[in-house]
Length: 468
Image (tube, rainbow, N blue to C red; front, side, top):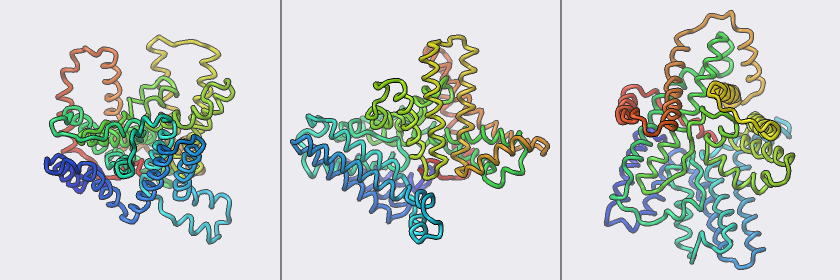
């Protein structure tokens, strides 16, 4: 069920009505759980069983961790919980890829494993399960779950994992951030203004920018791109960079806005990443919930930067490599993650060696352009997961200069990408001059966005991150 589908709006309005109905106030959590199962099951009803399996294993392991007194027993249940979550993810997401890599392609095992469909959103709800297990274990005084009871823990954990605004494509929510918010909500407490702003910008990014750009970036697909000119191929990469930002940032903002309508605050997931002056800053601004999760639950446990420079660089590459592989069951995603890991390691190495801070605005702009260019080129690994196709794309850029330029395609890409540019530049200006009178035009900008959502939305398309 897409956020921009009539079915979703029907589900949202019905759920809001029942949720805030005074007679049903005591059933608010159950109303959200029911909506979550309807939302998730609308794609493939059978997959609700997988979601229930994930919920059940996390309820059991986290409850045992919270109620056991012996630290060694708690550690055992935490280990079992993490391993089972990862096993569930590995079987459904990576078994086919690994079998194709290490077994004969004609093997019945390969045929079986590659035929298993990828459950939508499994990467997201699996990480949330891991967050619950680890947070419960780390909370040695049971501050996360005081006076835990089986019934309430079952209900609250089901809500945590099946909460429909973030169930399929995030943001990834940590247990220690979500559980304290579970309480009775009242209609008068809804933060309407921030919810409205998040929804308008979210739908604008998704329906106006991403959905219009997707019809052009289709031509990046193999073998379609081989007949295009070098200039078209370059601009298509810029368009895909704009599309993937608008698509995922849009989804996250919609999820945040919808959650606010129900009284829950989700973490910010994007903070204008294309103004980053370094790769480290980029990962502080892009998919913040994932980078924060990887830092807290993987990078720091591996030792972070506490065990010398070499281990720091190695940890960065391991974390980013696994983060890349989290995105998809193809070795190209691992390469994409390793690319960012190597970039982060080199960047840190240079910072440690030079200790120079660039302050002149012109050099800062060069930094932004360099990071944006490198990130945009790397996005090609998302669009073309086959290495041979990625190489063929760069070869086409080098050899297709003689082909006729399709300026109409370039104009469309430039038009919608300029909105992404202005979106970032506006934030950059406001962040430097927060009291500027320019802020007075913001209500009109939201009005323009709303008008364009109604009049200029592209053809409906799935969110890019649904595949992860």
